[in-house]
Length: 211
Image (cartoon, rainbow, N blue to C red; front, side):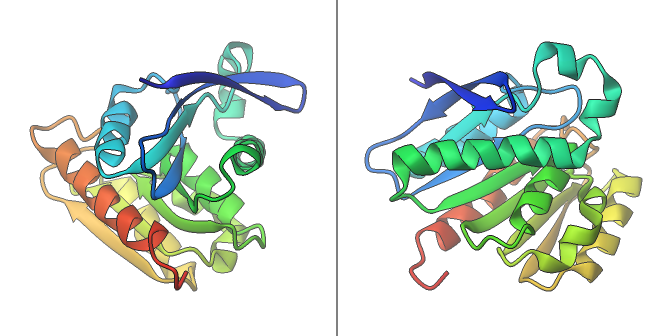
């Protein structure tokens, strides 16, 4: 069962759900996208798959309800990245022995790469699901963490954004296109593919002593 936690950032209290299996081989912090929260059934499903593989997960709200009501905040990537960095610091204080990765969805994918490209080497791996990673802009060439980009085949605009962003990145990257999937991966079997891809990416890199 997840532990309900709160994270303070810039005077805002952000609720979260932390699950730490025993033993845990690493920790994945989720960065949710537009119109989403820690209650996202898609991210919760992926988190359960990671938990079963021995990875701890933190799902938390990057915005307060009042902030989320303003659509400008949903696309304020530096703001979302600051919240993600605050969650990272909070987790490092409590579980500093666990290597940390990020799982970002939609605009949360940009926040994950913006944070990973801030000059820190504390992020060991990143996975983006249907992410607007192009919005990480100037930070993309500075990301050092191995990054997996997952996009639905039928999510044409986002797929092109990911291809463009990948060309700007200097770190190890992979782009996996899920056949028959749209932006939300609501088609039968497609979200399961996302979860398996993310699980394999994180378990290979968070457990490695070479990264």
